[in-house]
Length: 193
Image (cartoon, rainbow, N blue to C red; front, side, top):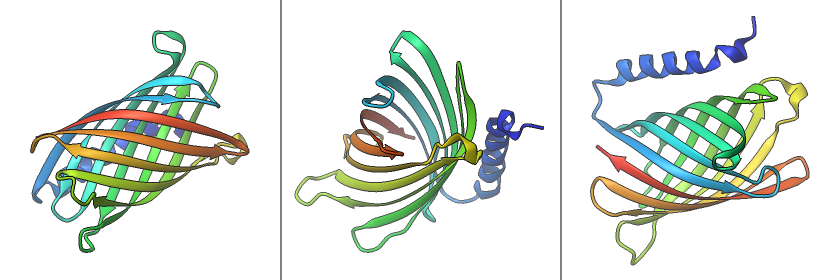
């Protein structure tokens, strides 16, 4: 049996079970959307939707769906789905965090499951109310070691909380898959319920 074909379903089931187990905690649900452009390796545009819950105890389970093409509306489509679990810690004004991800990527000529681990720190920007800076590193690889999908990515993001519910962010990331570097830029919107 090829587990890659069932990975998105397993991720979704685990996410639902986790939400049910921790639903007694104070939850802050959110949903977000972002537009991404990546150059060098793929030269593609992507639309990303994510949703999850920020819990009082620092845990944030979430899911993400990504749809990308060489040019939006033109070319082969690639679709990805991720289940994520993030743990944030409070250290003074800083919030270091770690995050684990399980995902599936599907395009016209390939399909593979992957895992990723993020580590980062988020902090308010002095003198800019409701604005924060997030610096992150991510390691990602395919479950099938023969696919050579190992990737190291570094990123920086600035978030601005427009109101208690609405937030905007801009993001820059540099990834290295083998010797091929790629850069991506993103604009995102988040709504906190």
